[in-house]
Length: 462
Ligand code: SF4
Image (tube, rainbow, N blue to C red; front, top):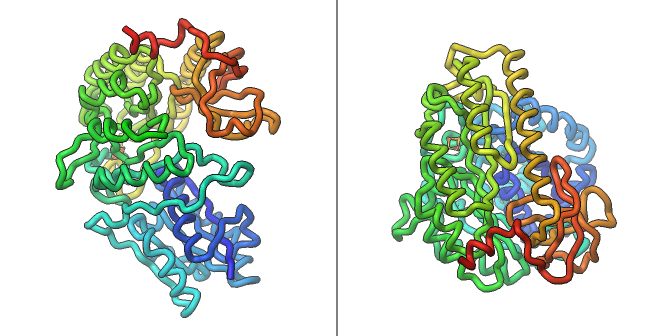
């Protein structure tokens, strides 16, 4: 009998991808996805401890679904980082919660679910899997269907490693995702080939420290060598990856941006702070100048590269001049976009013990100042694209109006334009007609026109 699963996902792409993997797994156990919690037989809250206010979100989500438990006996579970860290405590606190499933236990989900269905037992599974089996591919079996909820499958995430060995003082990832574990290149390539065979045109390689790929594997392979092999896959058009650590950004990887035609000209390279004092307290393993040097190298190798990053303001001990250093770094790099956060302590991290806290009001002022500056830079960078023709991968309907299509440039900018839904999954040349603060407006042109903005081809033809 067909059943329905509803998943509420918080946090980063890794969590989104975990949700995708869970849905694929459950499909084989006759659980199909629903977007309506009221018709679900199983509700799963996939939590994040990195970007969200975790407890608050989990408890309020659980509170929302309590009545469904009472009325229809729906099975309720919590997955992700909060599940990993809180474990049994969640079951103790929430009497109607059936399942707590940690970050390494996803492949066990169908069996655990069946156990609950049969015996009504409440289950907590949060052990770490040292053999990396939890990273094995869970492949989609059905091709994407235009018009279905899975329309976005012209691009797909592929986890290539998980966990982190960096232990930044503010971050919970090494504790909830474990130490770095990489998948074999053979498995990754098989997965990308499978996805390409189903119509996927773009893959985004995922890992908390993606450019640390390869550590601990029997085969000797670096991240850039993996990229070279993926670049060979016929039918694949674009490769992206996230998230990179500046300390692990090798010269070889920087060169890949000019060498590999399928590697998109975009890198997300979190810098977190421009102050060496704060970077040291964060245990980031680089200085402002060494970060800037790598950025210069990237721009030299690939002048059209789009740069985005994460930054934290108000880390303990951050004085006004430390904050000025952050603004200075931003001005010097001219990021295409920034994901900026006020520091807030995460239970279980070293920084949560740091005393020299920055007042909330000061944090807020700094965040607003930084965001104002970035807003202008982002808008100006978008305006520079007006008149250019860009290759756009059509992803689906626009979120702005149902009549329009939306896609992304290789530099990861969203473009909205008029076009037929049949173009979904195709690469089309689009002239940028208008820049908006967070997106671009364009029109399809029949033939790719030469454009002074198209530095990528200019460089390749040199
Ligand atoms: S590099 Fe630092 S911030 Fe990134 S996942 Fe690892 S510990 Fe967390």
